[in-house]
Length: 182
Image (cartoon, rainbow, N blue to C red; front, side, top):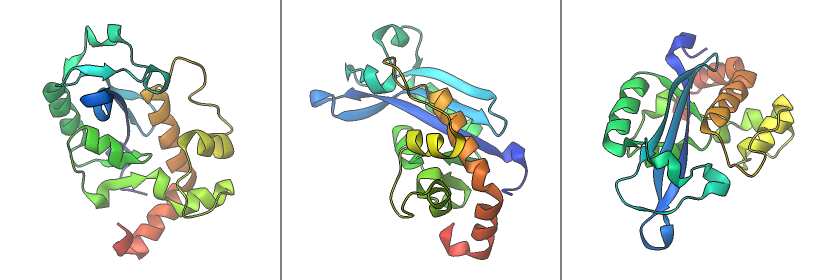
């Protein structure tokens, strides 16, 4: 596997809309869990620009969450300290990194939306990005992202780590044998 289990964390972020028409995605909640699913970090984050669209249906974020939110720069600093040197598991994790204005080393990134093996196991086409919700249902028989309250980034991060575990040994072996995929 990817070194020691302590080096692995799963990351999931929730975004809100800022700028004209709320079209710019900005970080509003960031959650990080360990290999075992324990929460290492879970904070609401106040974007630098005013929030135009809370996207509550998807993000679960409401205006009241911003009252105690950590300013973006501080949250970014805290999160990057945790991610440094870690293998980061995420689903379409480039979106999370983008929201953090951060680039994680590719060799230390495991994107569950880009693992053909996972899709194969679930009976989906290999080179199609399948939603976290559908993969979690197919492989773990768990329902996530249900209800009107929106997504929970902790629940999503835990589900992502569980999906990674399904193919961990095979996937890590594959990466060792095919360094160009890192």
